[in-house]
Length: 131
Image (cartoon, rainbow, N blue to C red; front, top):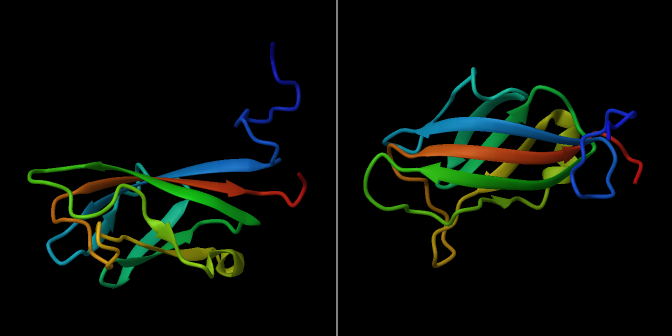
């Protein structure tokens, strides 16, 4: 049956749910390179320090639910956990279209993704204050 309200079914009660995707290549110093063609809705990603990255969105949103990650390796083994952690101030900075994520190793220390890794980020947001 067609959805007459044109809402994307996301198995959640949140209205205005939005999913953005980003493809990021990691360089030898942890420097990220955003693929503009494969990253609709994401304006840029910059490295702030070891394991800490700021993602700037093209539009502002009300809520940030989750950032999940799939990693494709050029060679070797992964150097970080599979999902990045969202910094605590992420909701406050969404009005300025940006938030920070941190990659942690298995011991809990901040670490950059390995050189040559291709990150595929899925960013789940809400564009509405209604439930």
